[in-house]
Amino acid sequence: QVQLVESGGGFVRAGGSLRLSCAASGSILSIHTMGWFRQPPGKQRDLVATISSSGPPNYADSVKGRFTISRDDAKNAVYLEMSSLKPEDTGVYFCNADVSEITASEGDSLHYRDLEVWGQGTLVTVSA
Figure 1 (tube, helix red, strand yellow):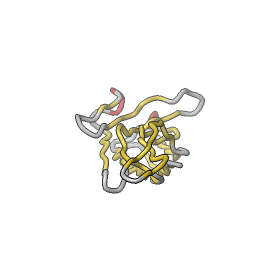
Figure 2 (cartoon, helix red, strand yellow):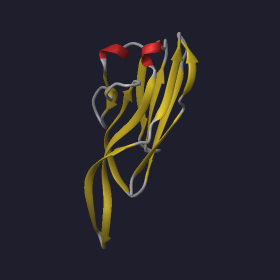
Figure 3 (cartoon, helix red, strand yellow):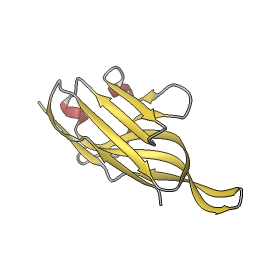
């Protein structure tokens, strides 16, 4: 079973920086788009940034110029560098990935399925 595990959340004052990490594990054939979403207290979960296996990253307007998403395919990992943090950046940050998971191996043939996986979330708190 493919799992995503986030780390790097915490408490920071406004203007500060944090780096979130997310690593995927399991029977992974390939990882396509990876991304970060956040859920502020009492609000819905919204996109922060995504990065595909090719092409430029995509950012929410509210974080452009302050956050940077990157990935390391050798480690099945995605990162989110957050700077100039604001109180409104507070929330639980969730890692997300579109993954091809190996389900069976028969000789030279691999069977797989495509699925969307979510991490458990990591809390980021930015104080004024």
